[in-house]
Length: 132
Image (tube, rainbow, N blue to C red; front, side, top):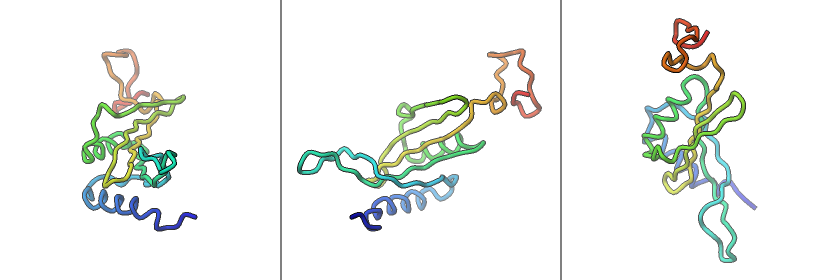
């Protein structure tokens, strides 16, 4: 049976990250069991409690990047995924001995992108630089 004490390492890592980086944007915090690199005596993979920091809305990519830099996550390890109009950046690291995944969610919808005149010089542009 699992008890609340199983979350103590993840909770400690969360407190350490938030205390060390209190000036960064607030993430949506999740905790779930993840497969560790460890194996038990019978050779089975071990599950540990990890953390997830999610970033949403208009500042998702900026927030993701601030946390990525603060946690010294190599930019070469950042993965990109998409499905339909939705996309995300994701990077995994370990913080205070606990697996931590950063994920920044954003939309690929045309209206959420700043037009690059070098790519599409004919696209109408709104006052804020986004597509009309």
